[in-house]
Amino acid sequence: MDMKVLWLCGIVLPHLCDEFGFKKTVINGWISGMFEYIHKNSDIKIGLCCPIRNSERMRDGILDGELYYSFKMVSGGTINYYQDKRFIEIINDFSPDVIHIWGTEYIHTYNMLCAAEVMGKLNKTVISIQGLISSVVEHYCDGIERDQGEAFEKIRELSLKDKTRSEYEIKAIRKCINISGRTEWDKACITQINPDVNYWHIGETLRDIFYKQRGKWEVQKCNRHTIFLSHVYCPIKGLHYFLRALPYVLKEYPNVAVRIAGDNIMESDNEYGQYIKKLVSEFGIEKNILFLGKLTEEKMCQEYLAAHVFICPSTVENSSNSVCEAMLIGTPAICSFVGGIPSLINHKQDGFLYQCNEPEMLAYYIKILFEDDMLAAEISRNAICSISEKVCRQRNGNELISLYQKLADA
Image (cartoon, rainbow, N blue to C red; front, side, top):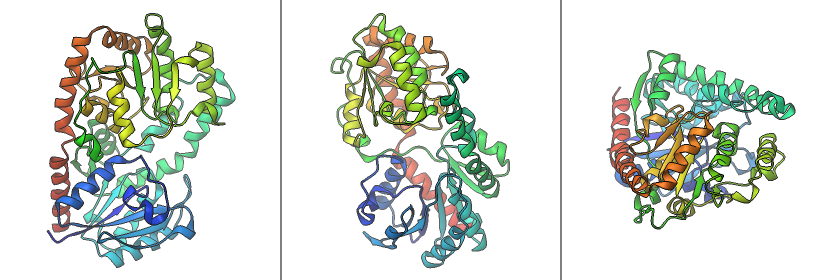
């Protein structure tokens, strides 16, 4: 298949980090996973277009036969009209058959759409939904009491700062003709904004290691009463809700160990981190919680395998990579019933769902899994089976390739 597809990414992919002198990132693993699949299983030439904050590091080049480009990234909701011109230059140079934009969270998505329109390629452009900032901003303060005073106001300011990004996300969705998504939630949100959009379902593709991981979770081998959470760096990840559930569990299981991927936010000056520190002190649970720092994908696998339970307590999510990874390895998962999570988990069959603001229910399901090894093993088996189909990289990769062909022929 002789085709060229220009990818607009929100990060520098690990594939290119050495070229730009960056440490390899552990985020946006679904993009890396899909890149690896297409690179190995098709003749499609992908041109990678990546954001660089430091102008001195900007460069274009060729790596492993693939062209890459950079553009100047601006912070937050700042509008950069230079990007339109830069994207037109890139489109002219690469001459893509299809333009694929990963995510709507940044204003450069709208700028690329404008460039595609100028170049007569808007009908050959597709956006893949990651999160939806216009929906996320409404949940920044969920569960954080107003009586927290300055902490509440500072966190609320974060949502206000994202209002500009939210506005441009909506403009992008209204302008775009083709959008791919992964869940009922993102389809509902998208079609409310643009009822005429062509919506294409393309499932999640994970990082390579999670497909190659040979050992699966076993209740006999896990560290009993250990809870694992993925990154909880901002309020929408719901750590404050989880902490309210923990004392209920500790009454019966005082030895519970909570292991959290990512840096210790309680050691930062971040208002949310200080709020978490206050809750941890108030509940007297300092000894039960350990922040693990940034984890490689290999160490993430180890944490999933070692945990008794994986928790996703978010106040809003689309299709959580961490939930998919935990289920594919077989770690029993308990997740808040928000956003696209119900598209991943069948309650009481391959995981548990609870209302995010009900810590009693979260604690209840944790204790159920701690107490019933047969149930935990059944949930694990069912999770592996159900999520394997949803994140099948061959099927999802081939569906994306098929979509490219449809757009190229349009």
